[in-house]
Image 1 (cartoon, rainbow, N blue to C red):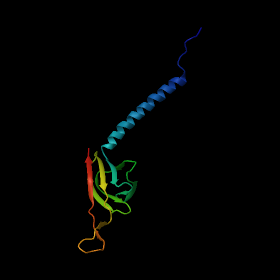
Image 2 (image 1 turned 135 degrees about the vertical axis):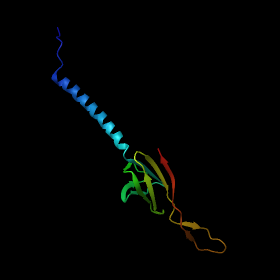
Image 3 (image 1 turned 90 degrees about the vertical axis):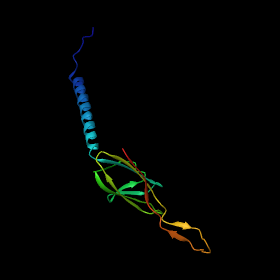
Image 4 (image 1 turned 60 degrees about the vertical axis):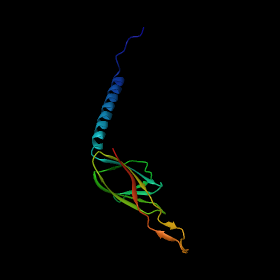
Amino acid sequence: MDIPREPTQQSSSLEQTSQETSALVEQAAVRLDEMLTRVVILNLVTVPEGAQMTVDGCVRGRSPLLHTVFLEPGRHVIQADLKGYMPTRHVIETTAGETLGLTVELRPSRTEVLPHEGRTEKQTLPVERRIVESLER
């Protein structure tokens, strides 16, 4: 005949640890949500891909970045450099709690013009830089 046993101290301890862990996870989620309202989330992409991305003078990696960039609210300088393309530099103004997706279209460093009216030499023209898309949440 089996006699019902009292829960062992070990199983009770495991339940308590599990509850404590759940409470800590909930607290962390609340704190994370609070922190995200104080920062700016920036996702950077270039066309074409592969450009070295710099934010406020700090290299963040090659486009497309596989991680999100978190910034303090305010003014930031975004740079994109890729061999064969004009370097780009953009200044953005950000607000706490916003999520920005920034796609920068890179322009070739030189544009060849076909010979015209008897000219046979190649000419190079400066190419304009521009931001293609800036999304706000």
